Amino acid sequence: MLPHAYELPAAILLVLGGAISCFAGYRLFKIVLGIYGFILGAMLASSTIGAAHTTGLIVAALVGGVVGGLILVFAYFIGIALVGAGLGALVANVVWSYVAVGDPPVVVVILLSIAGAFGAMLLQRYVIIVATAFGGAWTMIVGGMAAAGDRGAARAAAAGDVWILYPLTPAPGQRWVPVAWIALGLVGLAVQLGISSRKK
Image (cartoon, rainbow, N blue to C red; front, side, top):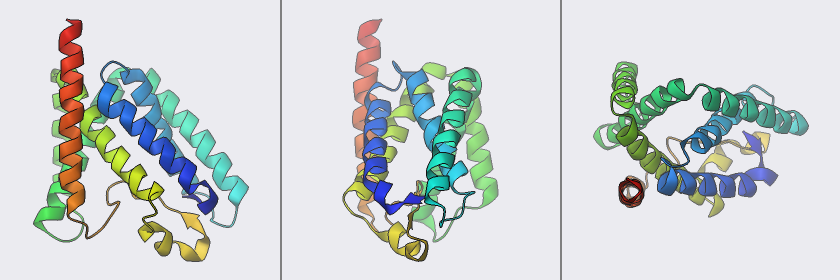
């Protein structure tokens, strides 16, 4: 979570990082790992600080982001497995939102995460392309909705005056989001496959 004053800059960074991942994720995979490590580290670190400490939130987000980014960049193969696992977890959540209300069962998320991790290690090039295209598309949508003024998260956290990033449910009840995610992910996939096949 971040103070509301930082919502728009953070949303713009999410859109830019998502675009890099979606359209050039395979060629710039180490940079993409750094971006997603930073986002994950910033989310985890800032959530440990109380909402009343604005400076503490910002420092925790920056330090956690740098540490998360460094961990994923230096742990390349672990990063590939984590990207596959993250894609598996994302697929579990998106598919479950169409099947039932609420969060998917933990067992389903774990099984799809494990399958994604194994798949990423066996078919690295293609899994990296698919994961970065669809992961980047989702990040662009999350950032775009925050930048456009979707206030669902803001209302949920209004008492503490913080902006909470909800990466798996950016717009509850808006059925067009998964369709836009799939369409944008397919465009990113086509662009990356076209670029990587031309390089060969």
